[in-house]
Amino acid sequence: MRLMKSIYKYIYDFYEKQAERGLHPILRPNPCNEILYAYSRNVSAIRSVCLRRNCRVSLDVGCAEGYYTNILAKYSDLAIGLDISFNYLKKAKGFSREINLDFIQADAMYMPFREEVFDQ
Image (cartoon, rainbow, N blue to C red; front, side, top):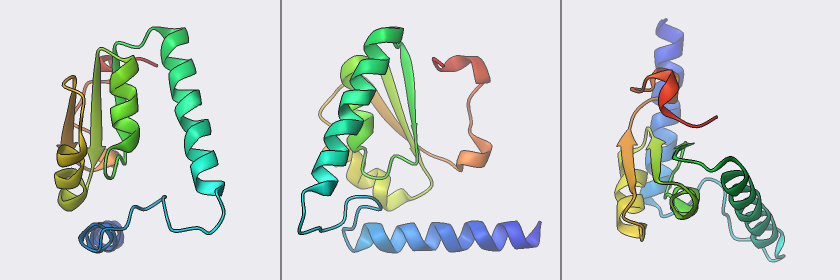
């Protein structure tokens, strides 16, 4: 148990430092357009799944700055972004453009939700 706590502490500290420096954990500077291509493919996949399944409540685990949470909000009745990093969530709230979304600070291993809350 002590080892798990130290691992979580390391991960938490790592992402807090990334957020303070303004670095997104996935979107890094790249001379090629590979990142934008991957991002647009992810957006297309999110839209496709949400439209096909008629999503009501969606969850973005490890949402960081909430890019994908905002996209989920466009195609869901409610989108929730969950991240352990307070700094990322602060940025996500500032970045949010949709009114049907919320951000929660929590550990993905111990999410504060009932299982049947989210669409599968």
